[in-house]
Length: 56
Image 1 (cartoon, rainbow, N blue to C red):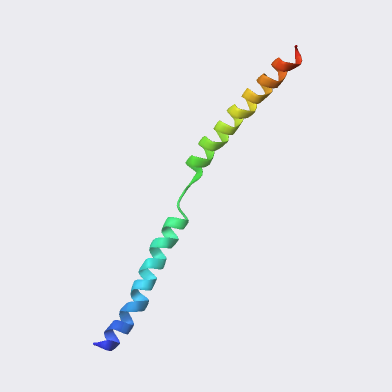
Image 2: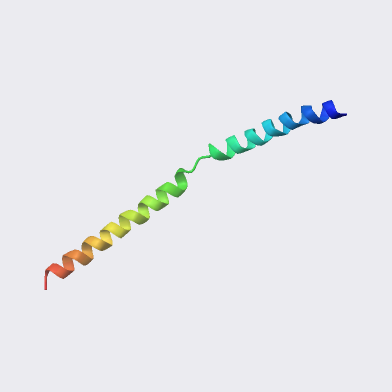
């Protein structure tokens, strides 16, 4: 029985590593696109605010 337990430990470790590997390599580009669009809107807003203060 002890030998079976020692064989199950690496098996559980391999299953855990496979799950973690799949999670770590998931496609995360959707969040990046939304974040980059938000940054572009921020830059546009800052340029408009800066150009409005030069007129005074």
